Length: 454
Image (cartoon, rainbow, N blue to C red; front, side, top):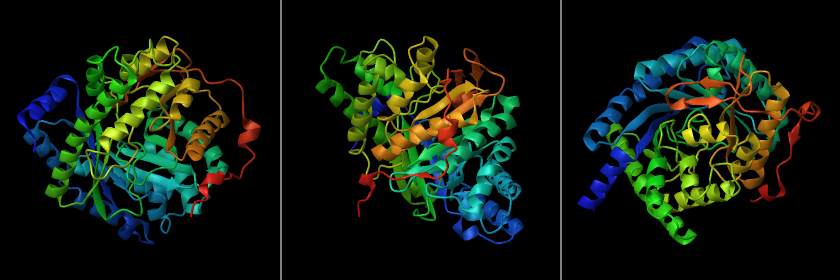
């Protein structure tokens, strides 16, 4: 039972501490849309998405009104399109037509984003996988709401370095294709190691092939709530600190569980998971960096930052798993630079470098996320950064990802505006030393020995 005190507490979290449900994401399988004829395939895809998700946005709005809980985004994820389009698409241009169909379906249903323009190539690439990957720059330049992801490695298979090399080139091509809009296409493209099948967050969401025909996943957020709770225990020891984070994460996750259950029942679609990730926004007071600094750091990036983030991530998960029967996705704390005002400030004051962000990746939910770099950065350098992140994920049996934005025409010290939840970012310095010979070796980096668990 929920008592009056808990209701008032939740209202305070929403009204004063920026608690929100970041997204309701409906996952939709497109496997039954497959056809050898491209026109028929596109028609099947459009019809299924618009039919299954026709009430998603209106249902989310109803829940917002009835419960007073802000639901920032309503989103769709679909089966990785490289799997769906392989029989009908013979070239990258064919895949672009599917991207435009997805965009039209997203517009018709009214969702903010649609994810799943994706390929899973951790061990090797089919012709369809490669064609989709090569289509990404044009696909993201010619659509508004479509998001793309490529999984290039896993703990079980190792790292596909051929795909890593190609993705460095594709990121640069996407930046060039969208240069009139500050290379924004790269903000909708993420490269994964150990990508989860049930992630509700963009740009990495796709509907895994092990999922049901349709499913509802919810991503919660609440950095401001956690920071406010920690303000009340300043100077206390780590035991008190950990208990405070756990209890707060429990309360935040209960809100997500409520929304997920309501959406599932009203839409007649099974409930999948709640993703516990603390997802920041550019709004002041809604920052993961702010939580870490409240723990006692002078600035994010100072010694102790990685330890503080590890503590936060672990306690969020410990508190959250008690509040929901099904936890999944990424679940932890995001550290996207452009989407977190505290991170932006730390970069601006010189406290936070890409190398420190890479170290933080070892203990957080994602990786090098929403980082603006000079548009002149070589493709092989981007590939090297992708490989570094993938290695962290592969060895540590966790998800890691890279969402770099090489902004055409911008150099270190410039600021780039992306708008909305994507925020703005200072262009950061990239290590000037190259890795071309390493990246160009080709082949695969083998899976680590601890992957052999059967």
